[in-house]
Length: 111
Length: 113
Image 1 (tube, chains in turn yellow, blue):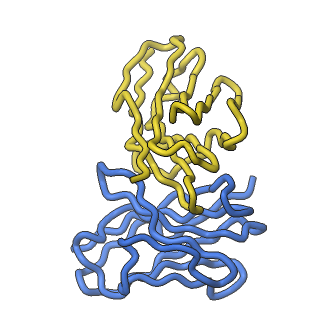
Image 2 (tube, chains in turn red, orange):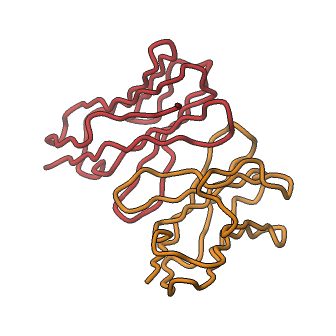
């Protein structure tokens, strides 16, 4: 069964810290992987898309890496800010055109 | 910047009633999707739609559900006879091409009483 898992489920860090969120998936035959941000009661904001042929993508303070062979992706957030507080979702497209989501990591950055 | 929009933001209905959730995808996108998220659970795929046809649907998307693109801009999800367990946040998404980045709307919170 194709599954996506995210750890930790929750993370609380002081402002300014660099942090890493983890995503693992069960099948290495993926098309792409997308990271999202979700604020409470809100929609999903796409942060980064990594195609299967890529190893990483960067956008501002965010860097996402992909290691298909080990079934892992990481989202690195540099110099975290209170405004980064949200739930971060990892989602994978395997062999059909639909996103399979992880349960998310709830991040709190305190001043 | 173009975005996906959804209406209404919140819909309350009685069990057994029909509801229609509306979405306006990004204008040059060709692939459309519905997902849902029950409170505290994962976001789940419901259906994908391309060229006026369903491309794929999940086990959740049974005969009570239907989708339609009635004109060049709207994409709708209809639930014919709502059940309590249909209460969830419903997200519409669109993409320029298949297997590509999907952009999500803000969601419609459906509450079935």
